[in-house]
Image (cartoon, rainbow over all chains, first blue to last red; front, side):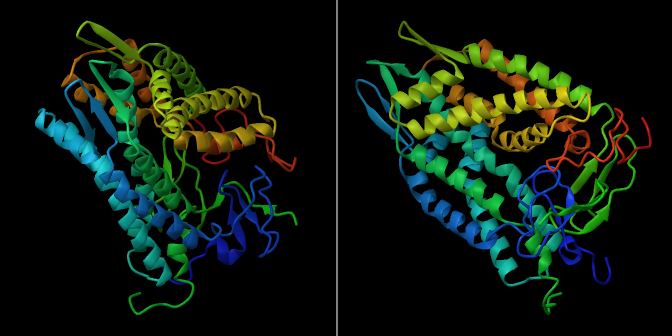
Length: 213
Length: 226
């Protein structure tokens, strides 16, 4: 780990995103295609930082309506109640399933927030060329890739509640626009985490060796 | 214009770009990047046959999980039940068409394609070299696996069951047990799948590889024998 580490970029080699084969780039401008699987080779993910910022900000904008707007509406002959994600958590808690309430709270409310904050942290530290905690930041990015999918939980919950409770005129549940914003948050953060390139975390060591190195 | 391939045991870490030579691995051994700790390669003896068996079992479980009702409900003399497709259909009817499409893609299409692609890939690499279009399927299997969310759907069904139990009597259906089995099989399937070994048996896009046809179980990475 001491001195100049040999990286693919320095040696003019590029690793294929799809199959992992290492190839010598045809040229710096035009890396060409992977000889094994035919995927277009990329030295670093194209416009990784701008793309990740854009997707992350879009997700942050959708996060508010996702949590404020109702995700479903329960209609009975005597009442007509909208349900948001949070009121669903409260309902689960009051009916005695505090563990399920906790799972939904973590998956629907906290994971998206953690993802947004973590992506902003990764982007800002890369843009500042930070030298600190590179191993931990790379791990953080890997964790984001694993946890993101669990936020889809509430979309599935809404789908199956709506599908089953169609007992008109006794009781029926209809989906509300919150579901769509919610799905948008999840998908946008998944794409944001995917478009970020963790190798950028390590590239900063090439240029300026900051005072924090 | 053409890029020149390096030997398969030389890799650049996908997460930090460090150049590394993967040493011969013992059975069930794993190579990690010393700089960022990313898992780079594993050696799983019998990976191809085991994954094939698990994929075949997963295909059967998938069928049952989709055909059988997941759960039923009775309230005031009325009864209803639903399947995965039924849930998506109800969402579609209720004008939440995008959500309906997402449910179909994440809970039905992606897992179905993942299992189907893996079956085709694993069957054809048993007699290497497999044709180059198997390489295309290998790229797709990664994407479909990424978007396959059966385990998330399962947790969603459990939460929905508890929520509905507060309003009416719910009965778990056969489909829910099949979905449980499917999740375990999918997890075991992706854990035993070793794309590196499969890539060594596929004809290259440029027609020049694979560089040597590997006899089963003796990949050049970790070729220490079983």
